[in-house]
Image (tube, rainbow, N blue to C red; front, side, top):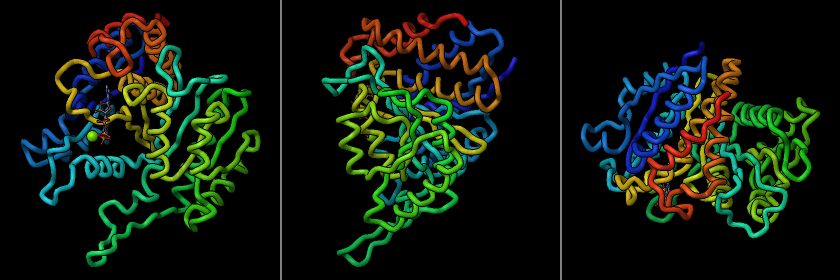
Length: 365
Ligand code: ATP
Ligand code: MG
């Protein structure tokens, strides 16, 4: 029996509803899985907490995140809750949490499930690729820095290091080893996405990526400029397996990817470091939907499936890995069946009804 401690941060807006839905599903998964135990401890953090107490991420909550086996976060931030300098609390809190957990690689799967609304008319042999975003440097290294020169000019600095690029590239190749390859022909392939023809930093990113690729001779590798990549993602997404890129490019292309396969309500993410893993939906707090029981909980539930997959891999625990697959399959089954879905993907079911349907669809091991 392996027991995992999960620090849960329900956050703001639709965050708590999506987290409650995820807990309903995880409870059922655990009850159907001999040998799996999860202790999920909720902690308050984010904009509402800041409004009440002047703190977004108390030291004790950060400590609980550092001690836990994994962190599951729903959504943080509200547009009207701001620091005295006028900035939203969400970016500061998230950058701080990422840096504290040292989660250097962010994974955004772009996977089209049967029954999910797709932005493309022709889905070819299917869409199933991964965007890996360097999560701690790139243009985001400038966060909290940057400079305003007089009234006319402002600058930010893009930082690419050998260490950061090596570990995210290595992460991409190791992930490719665990996957089944691109939909077109099953070929395992890692694509470096950059702008190496224009920026010195990007040429360096590509150079380090190519160095790392030599350690993985069995995996094909190539490099594509980011502008061309945005075209290919829409025209022939089935030609890609794993993409790896600088922070800001990953931020943008992962939203494009989410748009391809059903929108933010279906997009999970994982942020992984050497010791810690942080899992959260790619959507924000959608305040106008909060408290109405209409938010789509699938992105958070799929993030929980990624969490179990990562825990299974980290702890060499096949029971946990299998539970992750069964959880993802349950979401896929509800999507395919098509009757019970939230309004963002064309249905009229509530958040809770979707959670119940997914819980009911979980197969026994
Ligand atoms: P952030 O700044 O935190 O990244 P955002 O303002 O870019 O967030 P979101 O809060 O993610 O964007 O949401 C944008 C819109 O997408 C929402 O207003 C809502 O209409 C829709 N949306 C996002 N997540 C969901 C969800 N889980 N279920 C239903 N609709 C959603
Ligand atoms: Mg927002």
